[in-house]
Length: 221
Image (cartoon, rainbow, N blue to C red; front, side, top):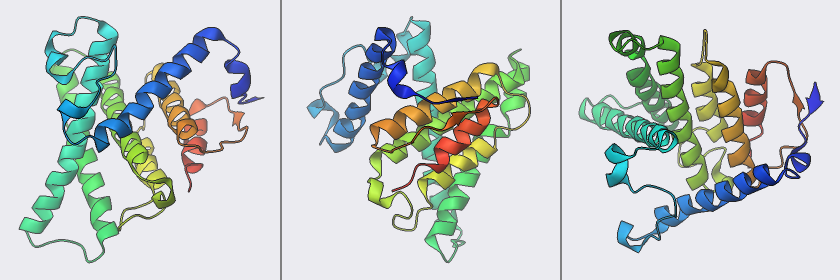
C-alpha cells in the first residue's frame, strides 16, 4: 500500500490540465447557484446546455447528461417526500429525522426497481445500480458544494454532509462494476480538495472502497 501523493500526480501535464478543467467547472456550480436567472449565468465552454441533452452525440457528454438528470431526480424525490409527510401530517418531531427519512425514501425510490429495469432492457443489473448510485453521489456532492463548510456538520436540522454521503456508499452492496469505486473515490477527492479540505496523505488500500469511506469521513468543517 502506498500513500496518496497528489503532488506527484500533478507533475503529469495531462492530470494537471484535467485538474484545472475540473476547478473551472467546480467554481461554476456556485456561479449558477448565485445567478438571478439562467440568462445572467455565463455558461461554461464545452458544457452542453440542458436543452441540448437529447441531441448530444458525444458518448462521454451523453453519459454525463444522464447522470446529472438522475441526480436531479434524486433531489426532486427528496423534496416530494417532504411534501408527502406534510400532507399526511406525519412529519417527525425533529427536522434532522425528517431529512434522513427524505434521503432514505428518495434513495429507495431510485434503487428498488433498478434490477427490473435492467432486466427489461437486457442490461447487467449491477451496471444500472452503479450508475444510479453514482448519480445520487453527484447530487450529494453538489449539496456539499453549496453548503458553507462551517455548516457541514449540522445546518438547519440537516445531518452532517459526510453522513448523508456515507448512507449512499452503504447502499453499494454486492457486486459492483470495477469502475464504480474508482469513480466515487475520484469525485470525493476532487470535491474535498476544491472545498479546501486537508485530506492529509491517506494510504491507498488494496480495496479502493475503503479509501472512499476514509475520504468521506474527512469531510469535516
